[in-house]
Amino acid sequence: MSADRQGPTVHTASAADSAELAWVTRAGVVESRHIGSMVMVAPDGRVLESFGAPERSIFPRSTLKPFQAVASLRAGALISPEAVALACGSHIGTPRHQELAASVLEAEKLDVSHLKCPEAYPQREKDRVEHIAAGREKTKLAFNCSGKHAAFLAATRTQGWRLATYAEQHHPLQRIVLQVIEEYCEETPQVVGVDGCGAPAPAVSLTGLARGFSKIASATSRRDAEVHAFTVNQAMLDYSWAVHGRGEANTVVMEDLGVLAKLGAEGVLILGAQDGTTVAVKILDGSGRAANLVALSLLAAREVVDVEDLAPVLKKIVHPITGGSDGAQVGSLRLAQDLLDRL
Image (cartoon, rainbow, N blue to C red; front, side):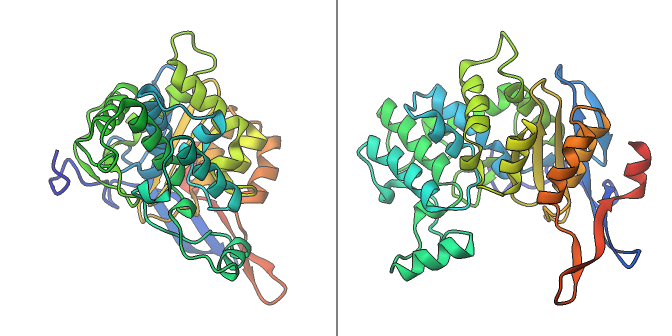
């Protein structure tokens, strides 16, 4: 479907359709309000909780990477489990991330010039300073989607398809990606745009996204699971550093709680427990600040995550509101009262 098609069924939910999910307070006063939609599904796909309008279409953005990794494996990508985790990731471009992406290309006798994603500097200041001090320019290997694109190229190489167009919507590989998304999410995307990395960006509902991710999150415990979903699940947990980065939110959640975690641009987050219970969140204004607090709190409310285990994780990944040179806490990010009352 055309990337420029517009209509009321394609637009994401309006503010009136959405719900208050979180507040930022300062001196006990609500300073900012994060509104959006959220849904929790059971292992069998039933909706357990619904806030806002999760039936409306969104661009899941990078939360689709685990599905894209399944498609690359289905198409024959011969990559290590560590590289599978990188393919699922929105990584921060550390030297280790870059080296892993480069190794996938080298194994296929390809190089960075074959990647169709943009160039970037490493995201962390220390890595960026060292990168620039060494006289290096921006590189596609440091872009957060380089692992996904490297996996795309590995699959394309295996099949003997045209390398130069692997990221285009009508390429055979991208048709397999769309098939995987339709199968897992049980929806046909209403529109396919172009993601920030240049790959196709299908739109599905938040509920469909949650149902699809639930199948991956529970793949290690389901006899009917696709072997590639099993591989993606295990790779993300075993090599969680590759999915995001040491100390980064997705990696912390996977390491400390054993919950599959994947962020997406524009305020999208999806968390899937190993039994398949899954939460998907879309913050309407595109900010990701509240997404982890909201999603993890819902999992804890349903006793999918132990509250005692959750507290230290939130301390690592949810930043307090501070003021002054000593960084004193002067406010907090908390669940909106209506959401808190429902939990």
